[in-house]
Structures are given as C-alpha cells and as structure tokens.
Image (cartoon, rainbow over all chains, first blue to last red; front, side):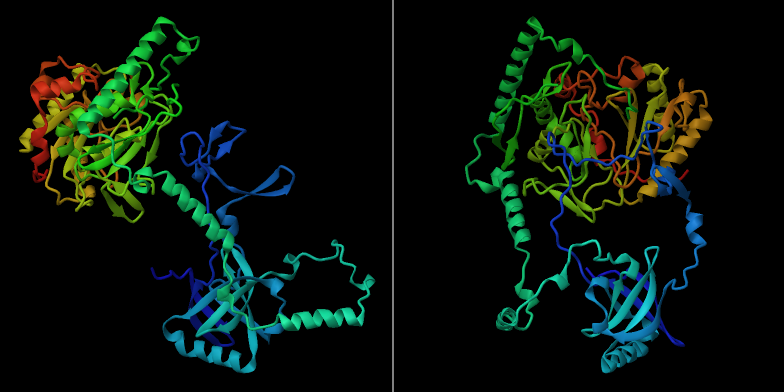
Length: 285
Length: 298
C-alpha cells in the first residue's frame, strides 16, 4: 500500500515557496497487545465515566481541560485554539542554516520525509544540492498536530528529510543528577588502554546486522500459542465421529444435563433462588 | 451462572466433510430452562436444511453469549486467527466476516455461544445490493399481539397492492417481521428509502395503528415501523434464529393465514417445538429464498 502523505504545505525559503508533501519516515515495530477479560477473552472497552454524574459520557459531551493546580481546571473550547497566532501554518519556514554537527542528537524528535509536490520539483532539488554542497542543514519552524515545532531539513538519500526537534526548555538539565566529572582523575595509561580498545572495536556501521531479538522471540511464543489454540490444524489426529455421531453425542449431553437439573431441583442448592430472571427488557426486534 | 464443566473435552466431528470442534456442550446458556449449548447445537442441526437456504452466502455478525443469555453478549464482526481455515469468509477492508455455506459452518458459528444468528441482508458476491427488504414491526408496551398481527396484515395488503409478495415471521420477541425478497440490484440506501416511503404511507393511512416515532413514551399503543435495520453491514435476527429470552423462542416463519387467525402468540415457537413444526409443515417461507422482485415505484 502506498504511504499516505500526512501533511501538505510548502517550504518557505526567502522569497521562494517549495510545495511539498510530508511522510512519516520511521516506524516502531513493537508487538502490541490489547487487554482481554481473562474469563471470556473479549477485548475490554474503555468507558468514559464521570464520577460526579455517575454516568457514562459521550465523546461529544467532552471538553479539554487544563489543570492549573491540583483538581482545578480551565475548560478549553475548540474556539479557544482557533484564534491562536501560528505563523508557520502549512509552511516550513526556514530561518537559518547551521552545521549538522552543531546540533546535539538529544534535540532530535522524529524524522519525516519531504516529497516535492507539482511545481516544487526544481527548487526542491536546488535546495537539496545547495545543502549538500555547503554541508549545512536548514533550521525551520513547522506546525504539526497543534504544536509549532522547531525542525531541521537535511539531504537524505534521494530527497530531503525533516527532523522535528525539541525546544531547549524541553530538554531536561543534568544539574540534579550525580555526575561529578571534575572529581575523577584518569591516568594516562588507563586512557591509552581504553583508546586502544575503542580503536579495535571501530568499524563501519552495518545497521542491518542489528535485530530486535526480544521481538523475534516474542513472535515465536505468540505463534506457538496460536498453534495450540487450533489443535485441528496442529494435530493430524483423525476426526472422532460423523454427523450421526454428533447428533447422538448432543442427545447424550442433553440427557445428562436434564438428569443433573432434575437432581438439582429435587435438592435445591442455596443459590437457586438467586437465579431468578433478571433479563432486562431491551428493544426486541 | 453455570460454569462449563472443568476439563470437559472438546470433541471433533466430521460434518459436511469438515472437522468440526465442539467445545463445552454441557454449558448452560438458558439458566431458567436448563438449555445447554448441546441443545442449541441440536436445534440448529435439526433446522439446518430449512435454515441454510435463507442464510447461505450472507456474512454473519457473531453475537455470542459466553456467560449465558443473562450475561453480557459480545459482538464480533471479524474472524480471529483461531477460526478454522475451512470456514468460508468474505474479505472486507476491515476484516474477514464469517459466511455460512453448510451445516459445519453453521455449527461452528453456534459453537461460539451464538444463540442468535445475525446475517446481513446481502449475500457474498454483491454485498452492496441486498436481496431482502425488511419491515420490522415493533409494538409499544401496551399493544396486544392481535394488534401486531392486524398491523402486519395491513403491511401485506399495501405490498399486495404494489404487486409485491411478502413473508411474515415472528421476531421471536414481541414483534413481527415482514420480509420481501428483492432483486439484488438496488443499493442499501435505495431499499432503505423505499421501506421508509412504504412506512410513511402506512402511517398516514392508519395513524391509529402505526408510528415511525422511535420515542418509547409516544408509542405505547402504536406499532413502530422500524426501518433502520436496512443498511450495509446491518443485520437482524435471522429466520429460525433463537432469541436470548427465557424458553428459547425462535423467529418463526408464519403463513399469512396463521397471522390472520389471531391464534399466534409471540413466544409460542421455541427451539424445543420448532423442529416438530418444521417436520409437519416444511419451510413455510421456502418461497422467500428464490423470490427476486423488482421494487415498485411509489
């Protein structure tokens, strides 16, 4: 299936606007699970429950709230968001160019690919070539999912990639951590040995050679369980009966149940009265 | 609630050449009546020759009662990987829906604790064009069953005048269904619109009897013509379906003569007496299976 563009807009670069489409470049391949009821293996549903009204709440009846102090909220309506000044709406507005190595990887958030759209083809490749030749990356601002992101554009393969980045105040400081670098003295021979070790283990990065072994093993466990739940497919044992036998078996089972029930009625267990009908009248179509 | 016997073995039977796995046959599904899954399976197996022509090729929505009819049912539209490979299915965008072609497929569905059968109004091959139109007559709380029969006869008369043949069945609960076999060349929207149009005429003609107002309080003494069961992916309890009510009533096809007689009660036909009725009368709705009528203009 071809990927769908998640966003359409333009790179704004001086007086030039380069129309582009935005695609998600990476995906996490975690094995995901749902939560089931252990008794019947039905998928559990999340309910929106209001403890104040003691009632379930429809999505349409909800509003976002900002918790400004413990259990104190300001409700925010859609209209409150619409009026916000967001200059980079559907533009990737380039503000400056920097060396890629001057950005610490801690700032990188998520990678997207940019695809030139229509007339943007030539200026798109002009920008890519220029970034390549100067060895710089473009710093820009872009609005995605109700947030204005800092980002950088850089050549990647045959196109341009966009990394969204954390703002400086989103990166946690190291002050509160116990990192006493200046209190530790390292001797020259120790350092030399460490350097030698690093040199010995240095080589080109072959990222394809690394695999998620946890995921592979987990998938094997799931497949084994699937096989066990389907013994017909898994075991070559022949079927034990035919339709006539099925009817016989059902009859026998019904007879047994009737006998059991008759015995239960003769000697009613203490819980028999509790099993009174409690079927609610629902719309019966 | 009766729990399935611990350690009860699953049995595999060859049905229609397929290995059918029956699990927990002694699980009690109707606690008041002691009706077990085995009895439910037996009913559907006995009724299969009449039932299968009506539901063959229709995607089914599985409505299962794992904790019996007093427990909460769950609905499952799409097959899970546990479903056997031999089970027929239609692949739709959202998933694979089970389809019943023979007795083995039917019993596989029932073995999922499916008390009711919920087939689509369209069949595989053309899921966008239904071959059934449905008038669901749902009585207000104070409407005696005689009056619903009267309402059904008014619907029949109106359809007769349009040159359309119709078949009545009990809903298995309180109401009656009137089914019309149609050519599968109209979209759901078109059929729905047609049903609404007929319902409007009925309501205008007999304000004392019919209503299209779903509000319960405003239809205590009226018969609601529920047209909302007609739609893509929607389903109603099928003909011969058991309903999750005490005594296991079934949605029984009737003759118009029986409806006119006024001798019918809604819960009269159950999974325990339906096989005898079928043996005596045959499938009184057999004509519906082959009925392919054009929708008349209104």
